[in-house]
Amino acid sequence: MKIIHIVQFLGIGGLEKVLLTLIQEQIKQGHQVELIVYDYERSWVDYFRKKNIKVFTDYTKKNGIDFNLVKYLYKKTINADIVHGHDLNPMIYLGLMKLIYFPFKKSNPKLIQTTHGMEHIQASTKNKLYEYLFSKMIDKLITVSPTFKKWYLAHGVSSKKVYHIDNGVEIETRSFKNKLNLRRELSLPPEHKILICVGRVVPMKGQDFLITQHQNIKNASLVIIGPYDNKEYYHKLKNLNLKHVYFLGKKSNIMDYLYEADIFVSASKHEGHPISVLEAGTVPLPCLLSDIPGHTDLERDSKDKLFESFKIGDSKDYVAKLNALIKNDEKSKILAHKLFQKVQQHYSATQMAEKIEKIYQDKYD
Image (cartoon, rainbow, N blue to C red; front, side, top):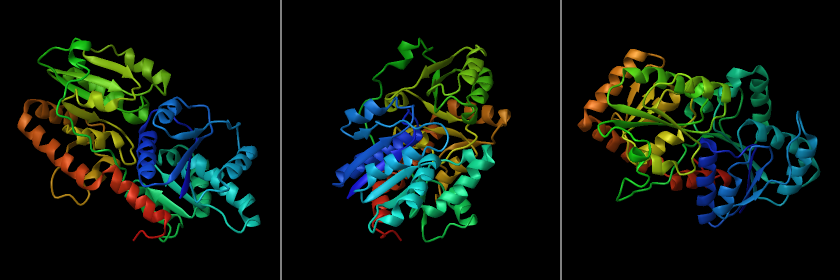
């Protein structure tokens, strides 16, 4: 099949990591795969191209609804078997493309949409309306969270066209741990555990909570990795000026840093299906996560406890559970091993790609 993926932006983030993994798996399956990126944030385009992925960046969206973009996308995708959009903005343009151009052609590509996150519907009534209207125009709708699937079903999308498919990651195993020697690079005290948080530096990810609570954590250094998408928020965090907190910015080699860490932490207020937690699970790392649905869904159908969780915003709960993990290596190892098993059995990149291929072919049960 000829598959064309469409994204608005291509920075460094969870959606982009999932997309990279999916495209690589689809190429292994023998498909012809291309990617269109149509807005100004294209910082990871060269990285994709170095992975031998064909990426089109020859059109940049104008402000507002850009009908020239609709025309451009139609011409680019006219001979595709599958056109697969990711998140709301591409879904709007796929819907407009279907309304304007598809009635005049007998054979058209199948339109697939993956919803990676839904925080935008809480921020804007307009976005909620767009989700409601344009989700009806897509042939098959994939969600990375059962919570998202329930939202679409509750808003009139047929159960025959909406599917929940978990994100998948490469199961990487290494016979060594130290590659970067992060402890030496940052001059971390030898007795300190390395806590790592991976994600865009924005209020929704809750880095402010982690930093302000770090003064109550003994024998630990906090390493924060991710692009500074909100400069005002980033400078606010830097001005807290707490000891043993390190900002490393955006990194394409996240796994190298995860292999240097001892515990993965997240105080995120919203997640779809958090790719960084799955990556931490492949190391494996013990995790302490906020009790939001995107995190707790990972324990769905699991008899075992896979990670430690704390009540979101509850500083006492967070500090107590993190200090317990730091002191109890045996408990940390057990949690890390259980999470690794879950990721290996249910969240592999190959499984994700195989399920999506079945949706393309109308064979998914």
